[in-house]
Length: 335
Image (cartoon, rainbow, N blue to C red; front, side, top):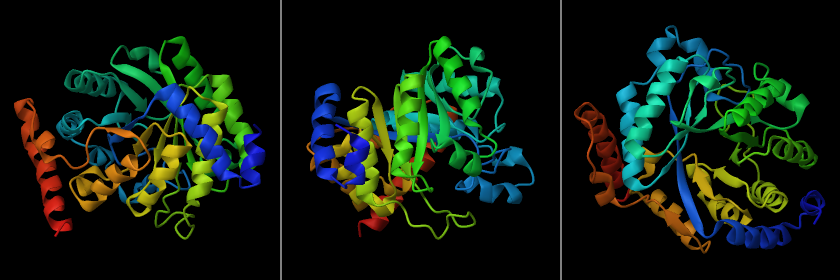
């Protein structure tokens, strides 16, 4: 099947039908909930045209104050473990934490969850410093068209990201990239994307839809159409049956979930967990998964799981704060 031609001709249902069959055959019917854990709101580069951090950099006088408390990070990992969510990756702006600090955080999270973590911390040559606390490395390419990528992410050259991922493979780590849809790419740019996936032998890809942040050049740009987004996912699933696909959507676009699952998504991300847990929005996510004919790993509504678990004493105040946030939102938004 010429998936690019199908997309151009808007034969989306045909793509869905084939992609769904492939997904069920290769991956089964489980859908995961994924949580990116942020380390800091500071990025030394701070010039990606779509990024929230680019709007914050001029406002941050002391980058160290934008770093999250490590105990809060670990408490978030404990919450994810309790409710059955995967940690999508650890993410932080450039030079927000040192390699030694990130390694320590990753080891501590592995101790909590029992699983190694993925990293999405920018272009780094320090991969040899990491060990079995790390499962894989994510390259934030954002868009596969080289000219567009250079324009949108001037401080993140594709060739440097590719070199990092090639080193990751040599060291035995899995490899992933992130792609944002709705930033000016075209359907033809799938040629660039497919070539990247093939050449790098990627283990997974994370798709996001544009979130137009105020203060960026995209603040008045609409998010991409749901069927375009799902069509890109379906084309990728058909072309690469075994790759893991994680898709991100926002609280105002929960109707994207069903089409994205039928298009080949294995996991869902980009949810404001502590604002949505136990609310009608969290329930909506679960219903979208159910009506897609899938089974959900993890919960968005079970308060009992949220409350059960043991933790280090120093983490308990932070865990309590997160639980209280969930319970408060649940009470307020369901009234």
